[in-house]
Image (cartoon, rainbow, N blue to C red; front, side, top):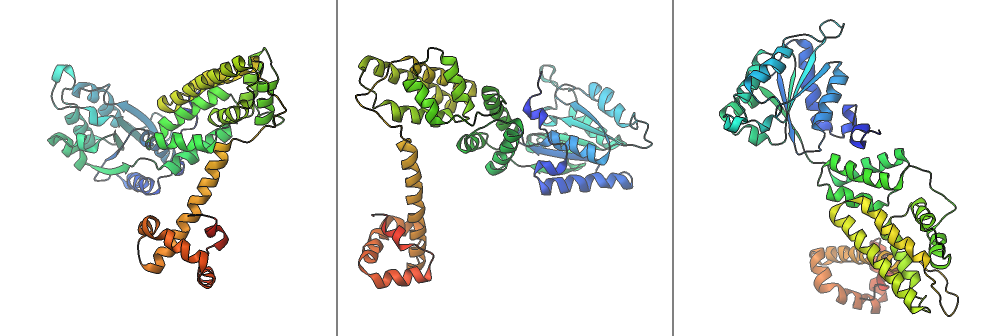
Length: 406
């Protein structure tokens, strides 16, 4: 069985974590153990889920050539269990043959411990961890999601006082998108830049969640090489004019072109509308495309990419209909995509124009864009000398500015 991508691509080096300051602090603490026992024997790593806390501890042990021993505090919640496992283990050297090799004791979810034995939840677990930090002969890393939950009691504060603290903040969207692109490239799987950015945005800084979501795309598309002889137009032709009974062939072609179904459906909608000669089949085609659009909407809402398969089923069923037109219809590029590209360019030119004009009148860009832009545009249309002066002093292209038609 193939490993989950979160494990397959888990960082093995601290540099792969993309956390320079946090890594620097971890290495600084670890190197203190090379010169004896430091005053603070523990290191608390805290931050939101999916920010690389456990991966950083594993990578640190590897780079320091320490043996790695992990316990989950939520599994060994009581004083007795912690003493039997973590504390006793912290007294001994590594089980390897390397003399004086350190053993890194890692305890995860330490902020989930409580002070009192409420319904059997915890009996002195935090006190046992505090004792561990006093008596250990080996480095200890405590991992928590919420530092303030850990420090909510006097015992928790005592634990924090015996440790150095490193925060792992949520990943930025750009960092997550970069990692996802690298993974997809290694897996030989295609996903559109828009889809990658959407997953990165929706992950809320959780790298693990983003990788799990992107694996859904990989499982849907598979890792076969894309068929470069296929294009959106050839597949659209097979759907609208091929009239193939075997929809599996059509679906396979849709997958092999490596196009996001959200983009492909725009091609289908654009090119099905002229084919209204047989009304009944045309209506059925629109119904199937509408159902496909519903599935695609559910993908975006639930972040469940397995639903892409159902959307492709609905689109491929259109190939079984007898769609015709009164004359030959040339396939066209989706007007929505074309218009979005034109609108993006329009907004870019308008923003640049507003920024330059704002500097001239010492106002904000928002003020110019909201209140003054039509007046500037009117002046530039009629004053050629003013146009030349602005063009000489700025990087504005006056032909592009005049094309705005404000």
